Image 1 (spheres, helix red, strand yellow):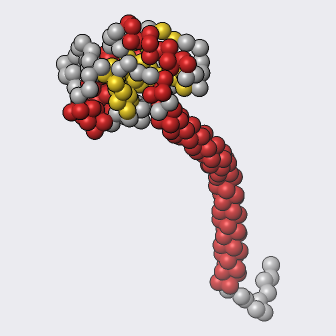
Image 2 (cartoon, one colour):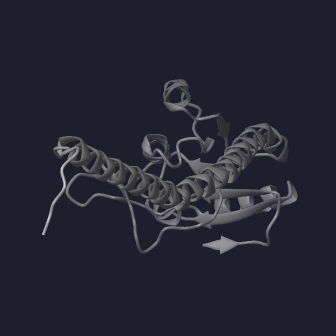
Image 3 (cartoon, one colour):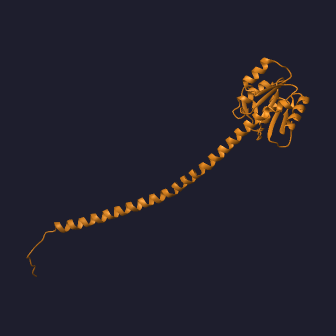
Length: 223
C-alpha cells in the first residue's frame, strides 16, 4: 500500500498487478491526485473500514479496529483479480450506505461488451480499457468534484443545523430556571389569599357573636 502527499482529490487504486498499480499511480499523480494503492478488493474494503462477514460473504459490516477517517473521492479498480473481482468490489461499495456515493471506475485489458454493460448497470461511472492513458483520467475529475461538493454541502448543512439548535437549548434552560420563580410567586399569592380569607372569617364570627348576644335595657343591678 502506498500513500502520497495530500492533494485536492484522493483516489484508491486497486490492482493485483504491481506493474499496473505503479502505472495508474503515476498517471493519477500527474493529474494532481493523492493516491493510495492496494492489491486486492478485500484490502480495499479493509482500507475503507469495511469487512465481509465470515458467516455470510454477502453481508458487510464496519470494522471497529480498522476504520479509516480518510476521505476517498474515487475508487479505480481492475476487473480481473483473484478472490474478489472488481465487479464484486463495485457491488460491495454500492451496497454500503456510507460509501455508495463514492464514484467507482473499472479497468480491464479485455474488451467484453457484456462485462462493460454489467459494470455500468451496477453503478460504475466509467469502464477503461488497459493500458489506461492520461487522457482517460481527465474524465474522472467531474465525478470526483461532484462527490467532493456533495460532501462539503452535507458538512456545511450539519454545521448550520448545529448552530441553529444551540439557542433553542439555551432558551429551554432559561425557561427551566424561570419556572421555580413563577411557582414561588403563585405560592405567595395563595398564602395571601388564605390569610385574607381567615381574617374575613374571624371578623364574621365576631360580628355574628355580637348579633346573637341578648340586649337588656333599663336593668339595674343593686348590691
